[in-house]
Length: 177
Image (cartoon, rainbow, N blue to C red; front, side):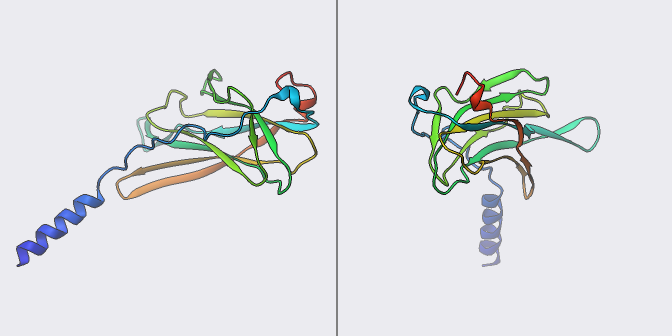
C-alpha cells in the first residue's frame, strides 16, 4: 500500500513538471481591416514601447529568454481607433518585422495583442516596438504596453514596460494615415 502512494506521488510531481505546450494562436488576432482612404483621421500618435526578448542574470552574460506580449487597449468607451503600423526592432535598431499589413480597426474598449515567443530572440535584449494609431474623432489615447514573462520550473519572472508617446498627432503628417 505505501508503494502505491509513493508511485502516485511521484507521478503527480512529474506531471506538474511538464513544460507548457506552445501557443498556437495567431500572432495578431483577426481584426477588421480598414481602408484608410475611407477615413478622415484627425488625431493619432506614434508610441514607442521598449521591450526585452531576453534579460541578463547571474554572471558570464547568462540570459533568460522572455515571451513578450505587446498589448494595445482602446481606452475610449465610444470611439473606434485604427492601428496602421506595429513595427518590431532589434537591439541595434534594425526593423525585424512589420506586424500590420493592412490597417486594423480596434472597437471601443477592445484589445489586441502580438506575442513574440522564444526562441525568437533575434531582437536581442533591447528590442522595441513602434505603434502608429489614429482616429476620426478626438479619443482617449490607447494604453499600449509590453508584458514580458518567463518561467523555468517553479520559478518565474514578469514585468511590464509602458509605451511612451513618440510623436503626437502624427496622423496629420504621416503618409501611412
